[in-house]
Length: 358
Image 1 (cartoon, rainbow, N blue to C red):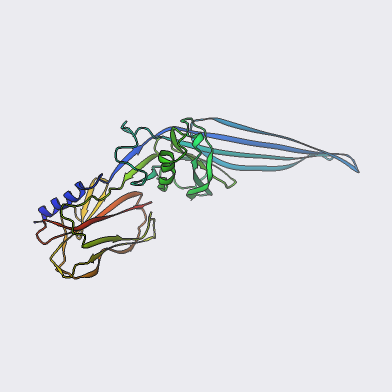
Image 2: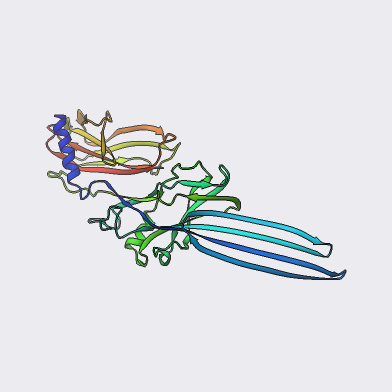
């Protein structure tokens, strides 16, 4: 009977417009720009009652660095050349990095956007950002990521940031080669794909910092990826009744260490009678792997509700716990449905809930 129950759930998945899956985009251009601003203000004490001050300054930009380097430093020094001459010297270095991704083809060469992809049936995440080098480890120097302007999304390793919205990747310089936080870039990519101003041939992001610390970091140029998760749209089942609703409830993510997580399913039986021994299926999907409630094993499993009374019934699927350290980054979706006691008909429509962790 459980084997037949698994077939029921596969029918549910097949009835979706698209199965929960990932589409990968790869970077096509990476590079850094450096701005160096230098000034020297000299004061000459010509006579006891007369002084003369002049300032020399210059600014230099360089776009010819193919690496993802980020730095913000400031140096200031007062010098006494001789009793009648002083000098105030400053040097400010700002290095920002640009990262652009192909938006017409996926990593395997398939056309993008893919068939069935609309403006709102997917989520996009920038993943696999890793530090490759750093001059100082553990110092406080936040690394930010910002959206790139449309006119800068040209496939060249240059660019400027758009707006003021920035996402912090870290506050203190971490260990090398560890993955940084996963960034939800859905809104930024949606604008590039479906927005009113689709000028760019890529989608791009800027990496920058705003704290004057003499620390230079380099992000790996080859590892970043954009992972796009298609969120299936439930299609009508073969015998929907419309009399029983299932709703998955859990906190909003993405989740990180110390966040509380739980999951419940609220079943609303609007019939005027009880439903005897329905099969209650819950399936957790991560990539192409599946786990069945309540045992959370890979083999088919489900729970039988002896009597589903009219009104609301709340079933706890995952008991409350605090998200652990070292869970990495990822996405998942959980499906739920109710079938009759013979496991032959779906009662109502299946529900799903997408969540992620970082």
